[in-house]
Length: 499
Ligand SMILES: NC(=O)c1ccc[n+]([C@@H]2O[C@H](COP(=O)([O-])OP(=O)(O)OC[C@H]3O[C@@H](n4cnc5c(N)ncnc54)[C@H](OP(=O)(O)O)[C@@H]3O)[C@@H](O)[C@H]2O)c1
Image (cartoon, rainbow, N blue to C red; front, top):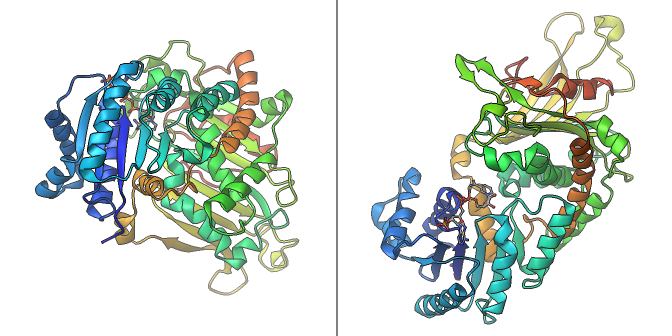
């Protein structure tokens, strides 16, 4: 059994999709593992008038995919209480405070409170303000505020939101979720880099030619057209998840693996992130929107045909571009990034392309012009692991070389035991460990970076959308972006059956 954690969770948006699909199953896994036992309770809030019984049934039902033992699931759900609550109504916080106090006594929760905002960001400031003004915070234990993305729409709105929240919570009480930071393999970037001398010694612009981050989704916008129209791929993926992955790849080794030390390195390297001019944004970033195509016999529609999407929508469903860090380690090394919907395959991966040797001594005997590039691929999703591509001699006479891959993949057993991102992050919050959450200084900088591109795109006519077919790897301009620099995307599932 694990060390028991003691806390009251108050979830705003307790009837919503995120709560049901992610939070309740993740809390249950923590319960199964013994991190949560007797001394925890959950208050779910939303406007609809549910009873406790009905809510507990909803929680119970949300666990179905885990095939739980029914008795255990029931016992778990009995810790959940529902409070009909409109977040804009001050009086409702008084009722919430009383329920929180009652449950605190009943479950002996020592005043530890976790406030989880699983609802629209426009309410975050209101909720945080009321929690303080109506004394829902409890000074006896910890008060932690958990915030979902999107955190603002641009730098200015993110700053306003941050000031609203900071009026009630200190920075070290705020846990801004980026669920990519909860993924095993994203965390393993640090293990690969800082646990292996042969990797870390080569981890700089003397040996690395370029780094490629691909976060491709096979699905289209589905039911989320309304949200996506106001977001687009740059805000939805690049400003947060991709920037975070790039930061972990680029940061200096921290003094220790402690949250404060890691954070200060992340913030430091982000200060060297090049904030482009409008002209650079125009050159270094391209956008796309998916169009209809038949993929594996299935007719897929245009983005513009999705529900709640404007028929002439200019929203990008694809972005590719070049990030650079202006510091000693990375000067001259482009970080190419790419993300989009309806691409050939769902995958998140990093390809670290090493520089070529100064000369190919085998050329005279084997007439092969080029040796294959050395590439370290870090697979993040759907499989986890890494591959190092080296050159080896082909068996036989003569001296031909061929690429050979050294591959490590998690065993299927390890993969099943891998905690889900939300489970890991919830445990971090219970432990007060902020390593895998985003600090305001990181957000501020990545918004400054994204704002330049966003402004250029907003002020200029979009390309002729749709400009890529569903099931492809994006528009031709994304390939041209690298070709211009004499490079190519390593990962191309349309050409090979590479994973
Ligand atoms: N769903 C996901 O997988 C996912 C992933 C990443 C991030 N997020 C983020 O997580 C947040 C929640 O997303 P979601 O998909 O769960 O949204 P959702 O399904 O629309 O849920 C919204 C919740 O807010 C409640 N609500 C709305 N207005 C309210 C008010 N005035 N007072 C009190 N409660 C109110 C709703 O219940 P009532 O209508 O009963 O009030 C509902 O429980 C968003 O910020 C989203 O961007 C979601």
